[in-house]
Length: 169
Image 1 (cartoon, rainbow, N blue to C red):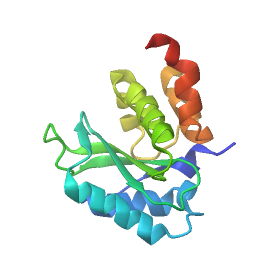
Image 2: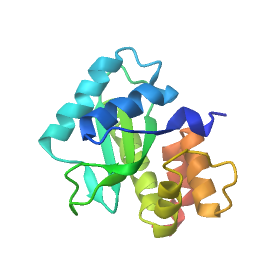
Image 3: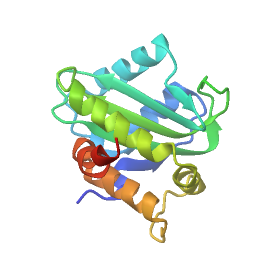
Image 4: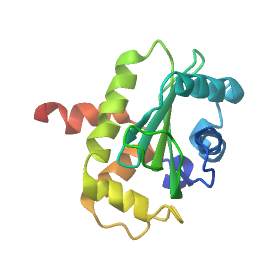
């Protein structure tokens, strides 16, 4: 099983492009990408089209490159907040970076939906943000947050979406 520290890190950058680089560089889930620089550039180019800061302290940046075999997601926690030009004008504290292939659109959409299901829950968002200084979830007791952490650690978003949420749609 992947550890939380493999997929969740603390970021210091206050600029969204620096923060994206930090997530990709510090979350080991991205370390085996064939061309990490090309992936980072794809995420940044997507961000230049329109901000992926969705509001409520959350951004979901993403890049699609052909050599990404499976969906990968890292989460950067920012205690001070990132200037992200989010839709609500507020700083981002939860920066998700999704890496996928253009050939895996359905899996990408299920991943995005699974993440959105969790971050729209105020308690989960606030719990994640409360750990932005250390990313230590060893004493976590909130079940929804534990479910989210398990999904992140396992990196099985599409499967998690199908099992947990399909019956609620």
